Structure formats: structure tokens, C-alpha cells
Image 1 (cartoon, rainbow, N blue to C red):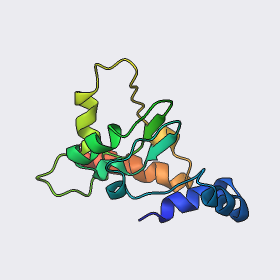
Image 2: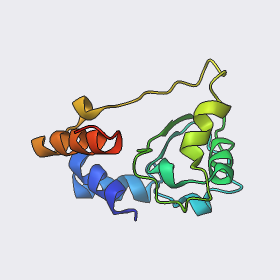
Image 3: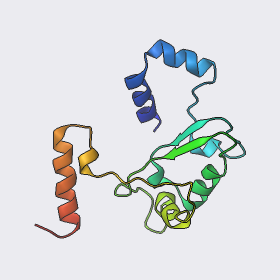
Image 4: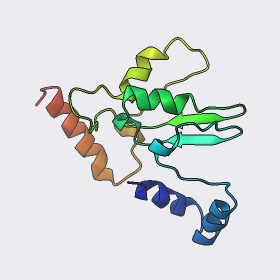
Length: 134
């Protein structure tokens, strides 16, 4: 489940550079479950696949942000894997945090896709299907 993060790193940096930065503690990849109790000062923190967090997990993550830190939370609310009884933390924070001016939400569409050109068409087809259009 951490493979996509490693893949993205390898798209940006050579393997030897990644290894060195990880050894120095400049880059750290940590499962969400191991974030509890930490304070992340002077850090740039990314929570990926956040659509699959619960509200409690999202609160725990957001309250780790320390002085000089920035957090980016990514996820696709059309691909939530939680059981139907659990509300996605990513969905919930859009309502919970909407009145905090320092927090911004960005919404991407099929126009932002940087994968294979067919992915845009696939997303559009699913959107039409899910909204009942033909």
C-alpha cells in the first residue's frame, strides 16, 4: 500500500538520492497508524489516499501538524474503500474545516489527469454512468 509513494519518489529522484535522504531522515514514509503521538515540526507532510481515512484518523493526522509545518491531503472521493457505515474523513473535513481561512480545498477534474489519454475518457464515462446520463 506504500508502493505508490515510492513509485512517485522514484519518478522524481534517482534511487541513490532517495536512499541517502531516507538515511538522513529528510524523507520519511510512515503508515498513518504510526503517526499517533508525533508532532511534525518544520515538515512538509503528505497524506495520500485520504478518502480511505475515518474521521478519527483524519483528526489524528491533522493534529500532528507542528510549528513550521505544511500538510497536503490528497484523495479521490469517488474511490472510497471504507464500508458504507463509515464516513470518509476526507469527505467530512470539507464540512468541518470549511470556515478556517488558512485551509484551502482544491478540486481536480478529468481535465487534470496526467495519465494515459484514455483515463480522461474513462472518468467521463463513469461520471455519465453515475449521474444516470447516456
